[in-house]
Structure formats: structure tokens, C-alpha cells
Length: 284
Image (tube, rainbow, N blue to C red; front, side, top):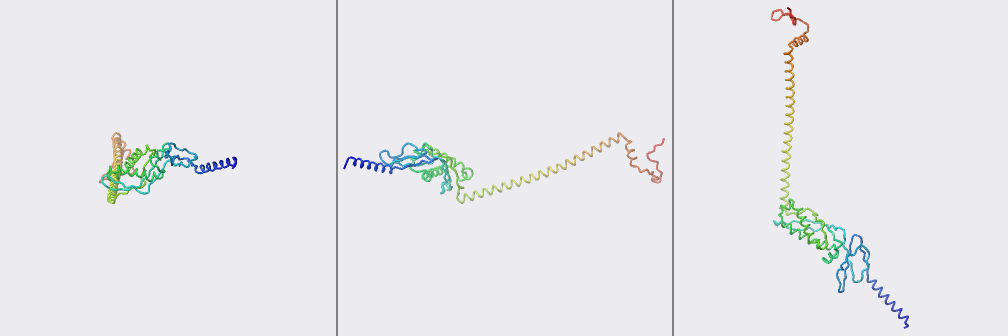
């Protein structure tokens, strides 16, 4: 074989090897809103590489694999309800929702902790965290407290517990919420319904009493108004009479003027068999 033929064969082999290596590699795209974590699959340095992959396209070798973690908020509602007990051994059920975020700068920490993708972390690990926190804090209140104002308190305690546990591994808990009404045992539901009914009856009685008081006050005000009006009228009439009487006392000739104004011009003839004098005439 000539030297030129050997060189050509060597180049071909090199090209084949290089092509094989290239084919063994793969491109990985990290889209917007995600962060990538690169992992070595084999060798002495296998495991998670301490770097996050930002948005872009990467050529990974046959020994590398990338896991994508969303950097935007994750909102998840669990289909299966959570079961927990109060301090008086009342078992209750409720569906729960959670909103959280994987911190972009700590995506490698998240993967090192769980060795899973975000969906599996949500369904398995976070669910277990929520369940443990519900059991822990629900056991510190009885069912009466829970049915009164304890539901919000319980969620606040669970949220703070999850933040304390998960913040340091790269998961920021935004909120935990009830996704359904809490389901109580039958005897508790009956007690709640009875309490609601009693409250409604009490409110109805209060409304009736208030309405009666309002009607009585309205009648009193109306009567007072009528009495005040009559008193005002009587005072006005009395004052009018007093003024008129005083005027007559001060001016007696007014009576004669009124009599003259009312006289029809006819003189009386007899009264009790005696002739009457001519009225209004004073003869000296």
C-alpha cells in the first residue's frame, strides 16, 4: 500500500471516529423561563456540575445530560385530598394547592437534593412536606378552633414551616391554599349546621326586636309631633285670645263699634212687655 493510500485511510478513519463522537453528542436547548442543570453520567466526576445553564443551545457529550427547571412560578393543585387530625382526634380531609418557585441560581442545589425533575418533586416531595406540616400543626388545635377561625391560622403555620424547610435547598414557597372545603366527620358537620341554624335564629330575633323598636320609636315620634302641633296651636289661640281681651280692656269702645258693625238697622220694640230704648244712643 502506498504512503498516500495510508494517509487517506487514516484520514477516513479519523473522520469516522470524529463523526461517531459528534453523533454521540446531542444538542440541548434551554428555552426562556427555564434554567438547565448539566449532569455527568459516568466517570470519576459523574454527578451534577456546579453551574446553571442559562437560555440558549448547548452541545452535550455522550456523558452529559441536562435537566430543565422552570424559573417561573409553579401553581399546582393536588387531586388527592390530605388527611390530618385535630387535637381531639377528629380526622378531616381537604384538598390543597401550592404556589412556589425554583430559584434559578440554586437549580443545581435542587437537583442535588432530590435527583428528580420539577413534576416529580411537586407530586412526591412537596406533597409529603405539606402533609407532615398539616399533621404537625392541626394536632395543636381542636376541631372547634379549626371550624371557627383556625383554617387560615393552620395554612399560615404550614406555609411558614415549608419556607423554613425548603428555602435553603432552592425552593421558595409563595403560598399554600385550600383548594376545597374541609370535610369534617358527620357529627362535626351536624354540630356546625346546628350552630349556624342557632345563629341565624338569633339574628332573626335581633332583627325583629330592632324592627319593633324602630316602629315604636316611629309611633312615639309621630305622636310627639301631633302633640307638639296641638300644643303650638293651643298656645297660639290662647295668645290670640289674651291679646284680644287686653285690646278690649284697653279700648272698650271697640265693643260698641263691633255691635254697630253687626246691627241690621232695626230697632227692637218690646222685651218682656217693656219698650226698649234706642240702642247706641246716649241722650244727655
